[in-house]
Length: 96
Image 1 (cartoon, helix red, strand yellow):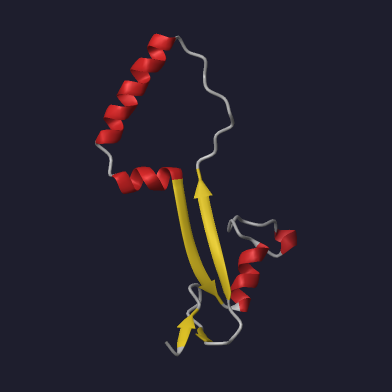
Image 2 (cartoon, rainbow, N blue to C red):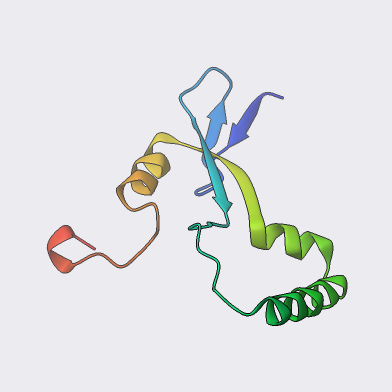
């Protein structure tokens, strides 16, 4: 393997050269709150949820709970990523 390339711009990243590995992990949050419902309703909803889950692709279910990806970036792409990691529109005053 003589070189790699930037996942964003495609620039060649020679072995031993400057490059950055970006790890993105996304997982479901639990705020510790469970809606208070009568126990019978909760049991019925749980059964319905399990039935619905049986019909969904397991990989999709897993991705809904946890996802991780890695990207190799050149310095310029890393700098742009760090300046706005969520890719949200920035106010005009910020140069966005």
